[in-house]
Image 1: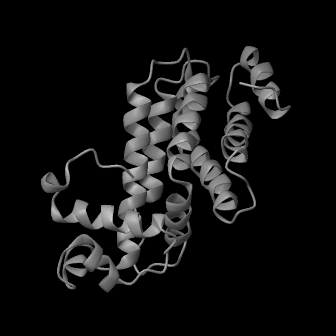
Image 2: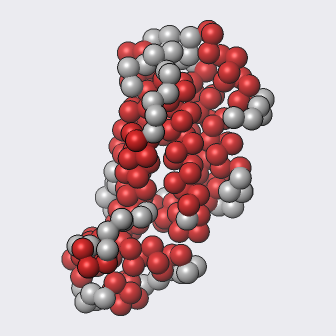
Length: 207
């Protein structure tokens, strides 16, 4: 999560999120709210007043990551069709996660914990994949695919991230396995002439 603002321009919520990022970056995923307040230069009560809980802070950091994925995907040159756009979005999403792997692993680990109130990570992730699918060019049933694929792509990418978070996938594995997970989901929907390219991804062909 990167906020491209000078320190003096950030609002209180942003200062708290950046402080949390700094603490996670120093290998302290178990930081206390008191430590966070000190790092952000705010009163002890302020993080609670702004977010309510440490979990809510981690969820906000996850939302910022997905927002950055959206921003970068929207700014990239458009790919030819929906399968290519989805694979491009996978590359963008994996790239964002790998910019600060220690921080983002900690965020992912935290948001996987039970919460009193459900978060909005799934909805944000679904929106990213829906944007990637677009009008569905290259898909055999674009209208139906648009209702099914965003969730399944979100589940697939989150599944890969969970193994990466746990250390079972290396940083180098993350983009490779994320592409394969997306290719498997897409195979059920692409037009026949696009299947060979997806099968090549599953066989380990380079980008």
